[in-house]
Length: 135
Image (cartoon, rainbow, N blue to C red; front, side):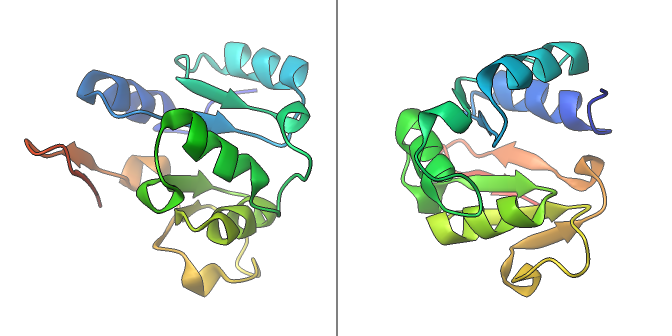
C-alpha cells in the first residue's frame, strides 16, 4: 500500500496552513488504521470508518459525520474521491467533490467540481480572511 502521488505533500500543506481535514473511509477501523500507517500519511483531525455510521457509501452518512466532527457544514467541505460510491456519497452529503482518477463511467461525474488525474494537480491556498481556495 502506497499513498497516491501528491497525497502526503497535500495533507502536510493542509496541516501547515491550519486547514482541517478528515479521512472518511468505508473500511473498518483496524484496516483503515493499518493502511494509513503503511502509507505514511499524516494523522487526520477526524477519522470516520464504517463502524461509525449506519449506512456506508454511497449514502451521505459518513461525509455528514466527518463534516459535523470537523465543526463544518457539508457545503463548506471538499471531498476528494477516486471511487464511484465515494463520489456519490460526497454529492449526496452536499459537499463539494473533486474526483481523482475516478472511472469515466462514475455516475454523476458531470456534477463534481473538478475531475483530476492526480492529487499533484490540486493547489490549496488559505486567504488572510480564512477562506480556502482550491484550484
